[in-house]
Amino acid sequence: MHKITIAIDGYSSCGKSTTAKNVAKRLGYGYIDTGAMYRAVTLYFHQHLVTLTNQKEVIKALDNIQIEFRRNPNDGRNETYLNGLNVEDEIRKLYIANKVSEVSAIAEVRHAMVAQQRKMGKKKGVVLDGRDIGTVVFPDAELKLFMTADPIIRANRRQIELSEKGELVDIEDIIENIKNRDLIDTTRKESPLRKAEDAIDIDTSYMTLDEQVETVCLLADEALSKAIRN
Image (cartoon, rainbow, N blue to C red; front, side, top):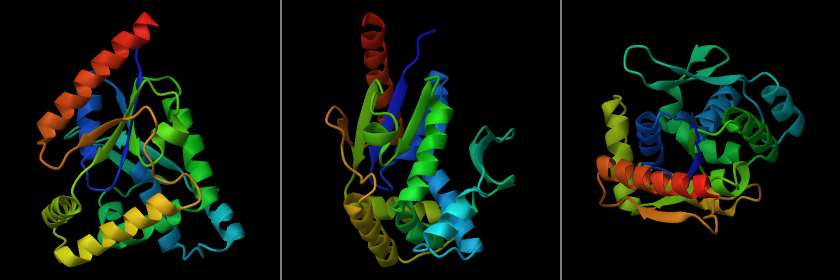
């Protein structure tokens, strides 16, 4: 059965991950949460007091990091495991969000994660979301999307997400976090966040989750038909 690779890039809190998960489920594809991978690395670095500017420390730490995704048998969610431990809830906390862009900007970290992502998705039939999927990880993906949304709406979504997990955070702190992450993501030297030339823009500011999923699935059907014809 012919399948394609779907690459979804864009800013944080635009709905990339949730949309990607639901699209993968609907299409029967695998889902690779690349953002969770960088968050897991950030958690490991935090726990082991890795100095981000010390190349030897970073490389040594990366050699000890094993990341995998496992499906929760109770609700079907993909959950992130770091060296055999479920870290799904911990990596979503704000203290990780405040550091992840800085960690993601390290060349050695990106090289290690990109290698893992390519290995996971080499057989196609996958949906990946992140910052450099369509530009670096899978530049030949049959469908590339670039998601954006109004920063205030993104902050509100993030606050709701955190509150649902019992973490109460002031909206101004979240807005500041989003601004900092956007700045680091778009200006870093290694694989900066940018739209691939052939990516399709999707502004999710006033779209429901169902509308986002439906839009991506329709575009996926078109991309699959095109790939089969070619």
